[in-house]
Image 1 (cartoon, rainbow, N blue to C red):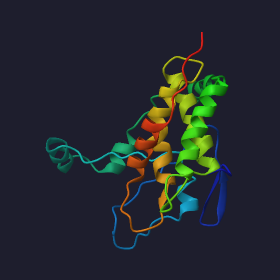
Image 2: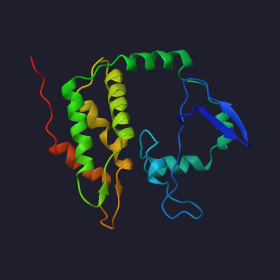
Image 3: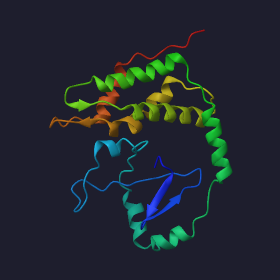
Image 4: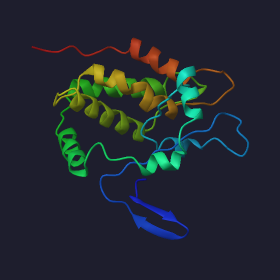
Length: 189
């Protein structure tokens, strides 16, 4: 991902900017699948859960065309130049020292939460920072507020926390608790 290239059948291809890599995760205990090591999980920007479709949606899939036919008929909803412009706007978003300190307080709390969980890496810190900047830009702001960090904390951080014992703790719930316990900076006038 970071190398901006892919290798298929021994042949390497450079990826044009911008590009995105998406992965899917099979259900637990699917035959022939294995959990990714922590170092590989940490490379994913965020983890999103889609849940199940409702009954009517799933029934509608039964008579639908083959997915290859659907993919072949798709057309872009955004042009490459629009994406590049959005990335430029995101890079111009600012984060105050107080908000950076708030973000680091959350990260530090993940590292000190308990003996049975590993904390978030520096890559996770940078991913939460970037996600908060994206959220601010999508809201039409050129600055990050604490709510941007709160909104992105679970999808960006939870998959990076590894429970190292058999405690059955849920990383998302740990992050939620950290968010409620971490002092939010107040705007100074």
